[in-house]
Amino acid sequence: MCGIFGVISKKNINRVKLEKLVKHSQQRGIDSSGIIHFSSDHYIVDRADYNIEKLLKKVKPFQSQVVLGHSRLITNGLGDNQPVIRGNIAAIHNGIVVNEDEIWSNLKGKRNLKIDSETIVAIAEEFLQAGNKIEELPTEILSLCKGVVACALVLPKQGKILLFSNNGSLYYGINDEATYFASESYGLKMIGCNKIEQIKLEPIILDIPSSNLDLDIRDDNSRTENLIPEFVFNTIEDKLLEFKHLNIKRCTKCVLPETMPFIKFDNDGVCNYCKNYKLRNKPKPKEELFKLVEPYRRKGNELDCIVPFSGGRDSCYGLHLIVEELKMKPVTYTYDWGMVTDLGRRNISRVCSQLGVENIIVAADISLKRKNIRMNLQAWLKSPHLGMMAMLTAGDKHFFRHVETIKKQTGINLNLWGVNPLEVTHFKTGFLNIEPDFEEKKVYSHGMMKQLRYHSKRFKAMLDSPGYFNSSLWDTLSGEYYRSFTDKLDYYHIFDYWSWEEDAVNDCLLNTYNWEKAIDTSTTWRIGDGTAAFYNYVYYTVAGFTEHDTFRSNQIREGQITREKAMELIMDENRPRYQNIRWYLDALNLDFVEVIKVVNSIPKLYKQ
Image 1 (tube, rainbow, N blue to C red):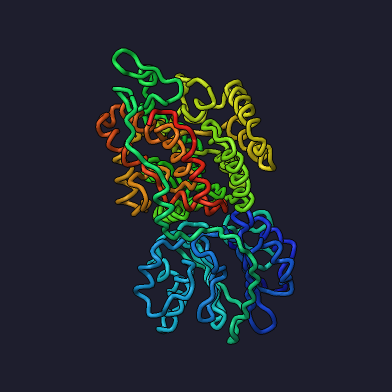
Image 2 (image 1 turned 90 degrees about the horizontal axis):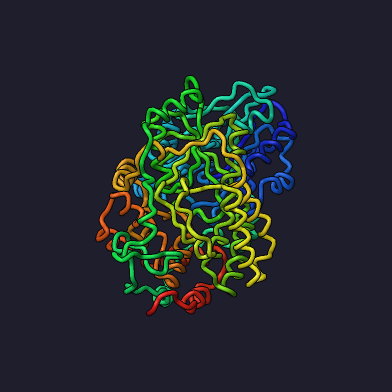
């Protein structure tokens, strides 16, 4: 998932316009980069493991008539950068091919690279060798590849570039007798293109100078940091993770334990959370939402709403409802802050490709974000405090900031969120000694006094471990500002109008979209989130419960499941997820054994 761009001109390319396209493409990722350009009589491919602006300054392809490039958010394949080369064919690809193993099993050639995008070039190579027509190639590729494919395929010998997409994450436009393309329309508008069109299913074929010479490939790779940790199972580490079926007092109605902050039980053993609970999964009439969105609808194929899209089960199901039931024409927006796993990205690719929905990615500086998390986790390990676990996820709050960015870039105001109404925990602030607000109506409330109280409590806890006062603090505070203090305009929740039913959600995702589940847990919740397995392990080890206990308790109160079923589920869902925890600590460059030993040594809140 990256930003791809290019210009094909009858004269030397316009440097200023190219630099603007390059700069905007970095919004989608800066982990690595690549450029293809024509020089005299052949095509040169430059690839690097640093950002595209730096590479452009090094390559300086400004005397060329053809320049294509990409700014990459690394997903599948760490060591294999784009453009992907095979048989003198080059491709720059935005998206993830999720059925790569199936494709390779049906191709004659052997796989050379780890990156999923090689499948696209391999299909092209065999298709053309068989004497098929170039104009039929995009259809062949899109028929075989599952997942998002937005691609520029360069065929030097034939003197052609093919632009094609199955979800619309590719646009082209004309300016000064040159054709420009980019992953988003906004980049083309910035440089003054007219007649901007979305490329979706119908390919665009452009002429370029032909060359029988081999591609001249130049790589500049020096990164030692592993942005995508490769998992190797370690039995010793796995056994270090503690898990016991705890015999602790629980509410007789729900499954909340006695270690839940501020919990109280009446004479019948029913907790105050149950007694104060107000139904949340009580949707308003759908007709009200249809009426609300009517002024936002646009004619033809013009996009009319933004859907914040994490790739989790609720945002995926919400998108399904928005397209198939509400009949809106959305563009999805994903904020990748370094803790979106490959599983989450593959599910984004699955759903967006099948629904034909454009996905705009705003990627943080992954290395910097992970450095911030590492510093905060190291501070936490020196003085473990359950109320401070939220510091580990503070970096994702800029999700709310960039919704406004996407609104400005697309000119679309309406944003529809797929937030699960039952994901209310209370205990995360409860461990900071903040009493639960049983009157809270939404998952994300932003009352100023409530926030000030929260931050004052957190500041006092930070004093116990000065390591929290590090360079990440501004990122944390600014993210909290955008989440909690800024007004949310043209902002609606799809599950305020559609009932959230777990069986219906899972059935839809697994059977309609072939949604991928994690191999280390039975639940479909939080599986694309790199942080959840770790913090839930901490909560269970120290307090004897996790988010799953609060979620299942809410389902009991809503009448969706029985207490017996909830107990059965949490006994399974609270098991440590070794693979995900290992991925998390590897991504942060922290030693698994050292970290887990600290967690295991924290005094328990229950009697063992």
